[in-house]
Length: 144
Image (cartoon, rainbow, N blue to C red; front, side, top):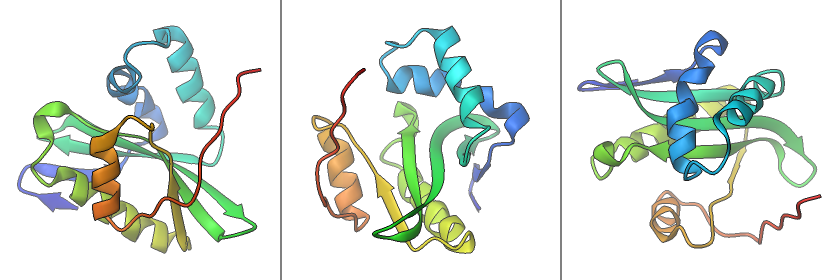
């Protein structure tokens, strides 16, 4: 998918660590770089893929995809670590990314898309509501 100088494609496993700077930014640099690298590499061994958004071949956005079958939804994809670089926001790049996700997930046989967003991330809530997502529940976590 291309729009002007923006292109969107699946990031190959050999290039997966290119997402590291954006993930560090998304997590406010709270996870050590070595730990984050290890987790990214481990993800590639699971039902995980990652979409990259590029502007003139510079990575400006990412969206992780976890493919699974849910008893309540069938085959679905859960979006993870969705981020568009600050300089590329409010230019329609997020909508382009979501359109790519919808088409890609359908091609993979999915009929349901899930995602989590932080409670205080109000701009993302507005964006996802505008994309047709609805809040269905709460996502609880407990560190063990």
